[in-house]
Image (cartoon, rainbow, N blue to C red; front, side, top):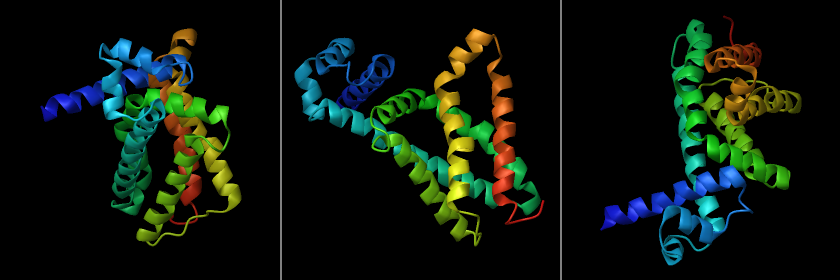
Amino acid sequence: MKKKQLNTKELILRTSENLFSNQGYDSTSVDEIAKKAKIPKSLIYYYFKSKKQILETLFDNFEKELIELKEKTFENIFSEETKEIKSKFKENLIKYTFPFLEKWKNIIKIAFTEEIKSFSKGPLFKYFDINLSLARELYNKHNLNPDFSQDKITSTFFISFLPLIGYTIFIDEWCSHYRVEKEKVKEIITEELLKNFTNIIDNLISF
């Protein structure tokens, strides 16, 4: 019985995620979620108090895995010899970051849409702040002191963070429209992010 309950809750979340992503949170009703999931509407309210709580649960699940990813990739980079840091960063992008973005593509699209509706009050800025806070914590853990000036934070947001959001949301349509291989786009993004990462740690180590 417990397993069935878990599966039903997951069904509601996955159905809601697809609907929110494809047609928007505001345009999706609980009735529509129930119809698409082929379950009684009352069952949705058994697991969630409201449509808003469904959205919050989706964001919470994403946030949890985002933190785990950040911690894993950071430890993976700085646990190696100094000379290997750049190659490890590139490896992390390919092995962990891009698969993570692909897995959570719908949630990132929803977060982006919600952010546009209410700038600075949506989840996107929150996720950037989480990244920034974790970076400070993990750098301190390894006795590193990078530049966290407002200029550097601004640069990181517009040069590293937002491009990954844009990549996640538009990659499939871009490749289809311009007939570009997805792997080629990944290579371009990876090299540009690697340049920015190198600039960030220039004041920490010498390659």
